[in-house]
Image (cartoon, rainbow, N blue to C red; front, side):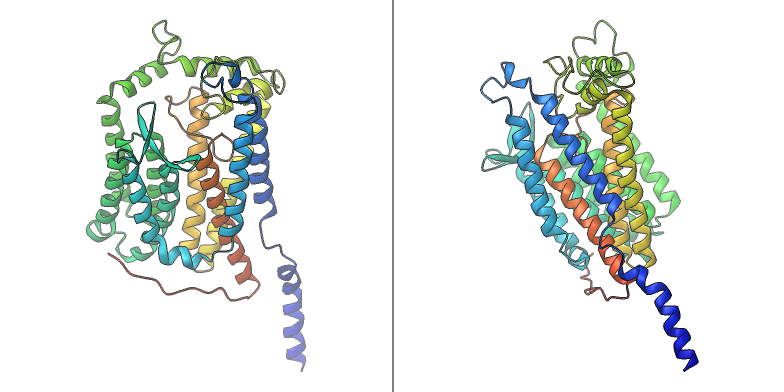
Length: 406
């Protein structure tokens, strides 16, 4: 009896903390919600004057912020549905999701199906909206790379069985994305795949070799594409008289905007550069408007919120792996890689630290496909966290049998 009492007392010392534990990470939820709300405010501010120009003269003053709000609501609905889907479903169907994403990338290139804008075929018209399959491919690669790494764990040191199949998959993605072309999406997709492989324990020599091949590939893409080479030259000297009004126009006005903001900004809504000086101020260069209106403090706040999301992603991933849920853990960490790399590139471009490349800022920039897929990714991350918390409480979490494929 005394042993039984000791056992019960030891259980009661731990159990209350687990039973009262939330089903979600509060700080992660706050960070994501703050970025969504902040993005809505900044899209409104950055796009308010677009209707005064000839390009958007037929649109209302609140056109972009209204659509952005609708995208957020659609994303929240899909978030609510996705967060109820067990991770075993994604693990079982990761390869099918990847094949579907490849099919969408092919359809984009088919005449009369894909939509071309400014010389790039990146969109599939779906009723009144345009869907960007490259955003879905980031999510598909997240699942596929995690599932591939788990299934090929014992072959991760083998170049034939553990490395070549992924190279073939990445080569197919590279060809399709470069035919659009969409180098920015390719860079993020590659970062997700390589990052998950590295975390999954790929042979260090193979990893270094893969990084070298990717670096050579990107250099070749730049050298053999005159417009990309022009962007690199403009990046090196944006204020040269031959670049200011041409290739480096966006970068120059982004730097001017951030320079005007100084420490605390000129005030919300008071940006001058968004008045038809800075192109794409509500999408790729929204951080320039943030820097001008809210200054260094505003930029720092956004960076800290992304730091929280990335940090939480890796913490949740480590907890899942510790609970013997390797797929869940790699997916969670892959979300951190996705958001961290894309936010770094976006901010680096706005600050002139990286060559100009069109990439939205996750959860903040205007863009329906980006917002929706970002929220679906967050939902999967929170689902991983939820299942970890269920296991910590001692509650069973179903783990379906895996389906094998080459």
